[in-house]
Length: 178
Image 1 (tube, one colour):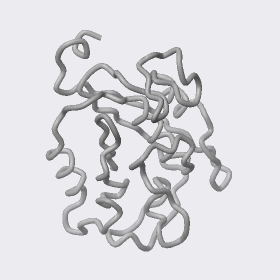
Image 2 (cartoon, helix red, strand yellow; image 1 turned 90 degrees about the vertical axis):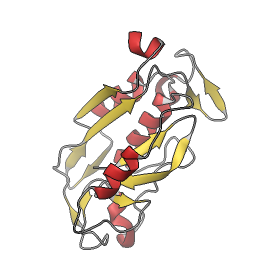
Image 3 (spheres, helix red, strand yellow; image 1 turned 180 degrees about the vertical axis):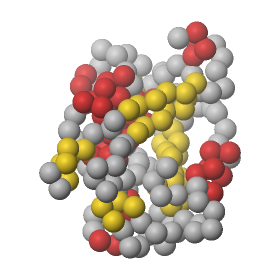
């Protein structure tokens, strides 16, 4: 499991798949401890920029920074940081990594309400009529593209996100009604 938080902008802290907090070592004795701690310490607030968060997940599984949002996941660039790639399983010290291209890939979006921000900074928008295919403010577009696009091919295996799930948390106002 990995986690990325987004409010009006992407938070600087994240947990990579494998429970590596901000790219540091995982806790070998307590799997997913950082994942749990990060989620328990986040408070809802700010804008609901769901599309940029979903585009960042798209880039993470594709392992290319196509959308270049600040504070996004750093990507796998060499043998010393394979843990940054969701297709590798590594030990708690981010070493002894094994490629697992046949693993199923999932994105779980947990949101506090209706999306109200998207596009590409600094040109943010609240309209689904701007940004179109590659920077759409509508989070349905990156969710659909993650599921249908071949994000990359590894060892003759086409990599896609198999499912995108959405959870509504802390709902109130228009987010509760939509």
